Image (cartoon, rainbow, N blue to C red; front, top):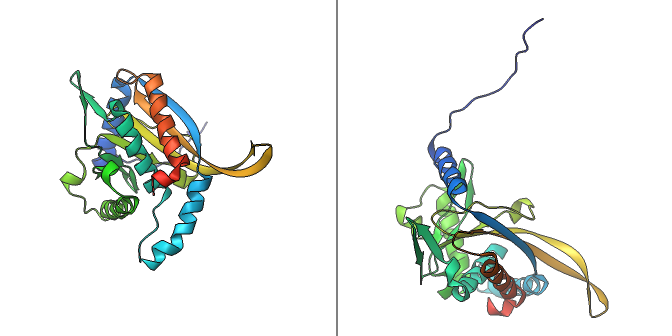
Length: 234
């Protein structure tokens, strides 16, 4: 009987992909993770964002993305729930005053997470300008070492590729990471009426050695409350 010859290509794991593989394996081995997920009603948020497009265009300003708004909501929630704004390394928990959020940026050969610093103190248009700047620097290989260090929490957006719920791996030595899913249209009964609503999926992974389920849920609820009361963000 003739031997079956399979066709395939091989490539050695190296460079950025190798570093990512090593870090993700280490995170999976060493963290005791739990994941929580829920939706936030962003109907009003999207309505306000649409209304502001004209205002922003007249001022020659780019309209903030949904991810920018989630970053702001996350920063405000971290301020209220500071235990998640921490790192855990060598049996030492460090809880930070500054809220520096790593923003995941997808590249052809991997994922990179530049830092947006002091997000809680920035206006939404300052956040928007910075995210566009670091994303462009990441895609053109112009990030500097200082752009990559000092993060205290990570946000990754999988909604842009229509994923609803994700189980992101923690960016060590941080203790939490939030995945932003896609926005889904739904019908909901409110005060006896069936209304069109827009829901965004949010998935939170935390290191259960440091963060228990209840405080994790409080943080996730806080992020959703900020998004659902969107005047706080603008």
